[in-house]
Length: 213
Length: 213
DNA sequence: GTCTATAGCTGGATAGAC
DNA sequence: GTCTATCCAGCTATAGAC
Image 1 (tube, helix red, strand yellow):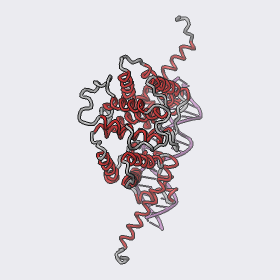
Image 2 (spheres, rainbow over the protein chains, first blue to last red; image 1 turned 180 degrees about the vertical axis):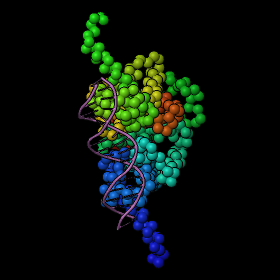
Image 3 (cartoon, helix red, strand yellow; image 1 turned 120 degrees about the horizontal axis):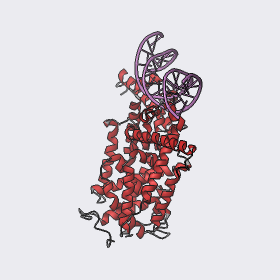
Image 4 (spheres, protein in one colour; image 1 turned 120 degrees about the vertical axis):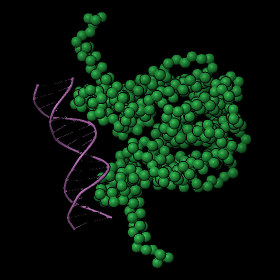
């Protein structure tokens, strides 16, 4: 097995770890100065190299963002793939939302890069994006186990969960003001879905009103 | 009355309208190039003046953002102060949320400036902020008419509404994918609040589970 | 108040020696 | 691959004539 390591493999490994060190320095910096505040000068200094050396590993600044996006998407997929123990299905769902919260709040810059798309002129490559779409598709499958298959219910779910997260990170960072509403939100959502499943709901959008509950 | 216009008033009025023209040009530009893409060169060119002239009316770039913020906050307060006709209280609430959607989606840059706080290094002044906090306080009072007074319900409400708006503007701009979920969301929220009012809800956060509904 | 001209800085990206 | 040195473009903001 040691014999299987050719000189090419060696160089390849060196190159990969150098790239990873640069990306790690980049995460460091965006954690301090915000996602958009990353500059190649600062990045090079933090990584202990010079600016042109950065270009030996990445074609452009956006290529660095793309590598960061790929890491973030992979971490997201890994975090959400972790199985959940527990017997109460509602509680399992709550735990999963909590995990999503933990992922988002523990690294706001990562959350911003992965989910808020606020970097002007940056679009992630398909390869970097792939793990995230896989993970989101699995989330959709998981909700189907709860009988939630209608598109509007899935959209409502994403709006509710991301709304909670966004309020938490932007209005009470480090606190628990909206984190503490997770269980209540899940209960509300599931109750709503079980009471309005089926194709209709209401045929016209406003014929409910008076005597529903 | 005409006599009451002194030369000082005249100059004051000229100055105000010149400032407004610059701010109008700024709204023009951020609508095209994004909120963060505003540059004083472009702004001056669009307003038909030169860069130093801009500094005759504003101390800095952030002062321009602040003036824009003040306009946006005033427009928000005016939009939400407009009275709602209708007899069904639920329908009235739905109409108000729709109005909020209309306000946000009709000018994404304004929405971003007012509610998302994504401009690095910019904080609105208290004066510019004031109309917005007034309007939000009135919203809180309005929800109290529905019996919604608990802090956690208000937080849940803001998370739900802003979550819907954010999904709409960032994932389906110009469409109706989340706008069409407004009525359903309001129904879900009100049903939840009326079923869980009172101080308790659940004493421990996870003792619900099995036999609740 | 408005202009021309420019300072002063920071950014991404490159040339070429070693 | 890594460096020194530099280019060039963009930005905010200012100086000083008129």
